Amino acid sequence: MTDWTVETLGRAIAARKISPVEATRACLDRIERLDGGIHAFITVDAEGALATARALETELSAGRSRGPLHGVPLAYKDLCHVPGLPTSCGTKTREYFAPSIECTATARLRDAGAVTLGKLNMTELAMGPFGDNAHHGDVQNPWRPGHCAGGSSSGSAAAVAAGFALATLGSDTGGSIRLPAACCGVVGLKPTYGRVSRAGVMPLSWSMDHLGPLTRTVADTALLLEIVAGHDPRDPTSSRRGVPYYQRMLESPVAGLRIGIPENYYFDGIDVEMDAAVRAAADVLAGLGVL
Image (tube, rainbow, N blue to C red; front, side, top):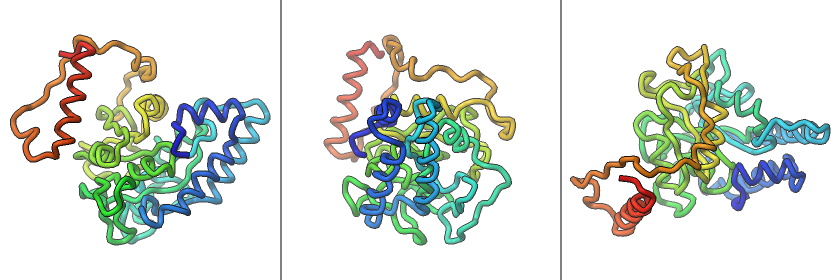
């Protein structure tokens, strides 16, 4: 599963090169084999995931496809309420968060054909940047166990990096998607406030919370954002603006855009390789015409 992206697996499933059940089993086998040392998951719903995968396989056999996510295994930060699964929010209380409504974003992904593998570990109550959790185990960086996975969406980033799920959802109030994505080497996006509904999600700071995807590629992030974005009457801050075709926007030229890089303190005290990587990225953007 480490070789697939959401985009490539979705195409392979549509072409009947691999089935939803096979893809789901591969993820579950990898989780069972490796997550004991990573602690990315709090709850693994193997039975429910396989049942969903079988139903989606039946739909394909009948000639019905729900789109590019049909049969693709995903997982969600354990502050998103998914019916039938506990939502501990990283606490020791199994049903810490039990709203009357389902998380809108996970519901949209399910309706688009995604398979729910389970709920992901996180810093307790989403407060902390390191991914430590006294109740469910500290999330390890899949690239180097014993090192920080970042937080608070620690399991969301680690699950993608370890090949447990093709993509995940996390939440971001002060860096909780962006930091673990950076630590684990995956793509993480904090969408514009109001772009993605927070209905059915435990709030940390209602005026600052964002829900967003973590994936292996920018193209996968664009695909997931198209599905989860959009107005939701259950979230009063949800934007009424139409949802752009984000995948097509990836082909748009970036020449003329202005990107600021602060010189004061920005490069102080960081690893030499990290310094070089940031400057190399800036050079690539400059070569594309970014000012």
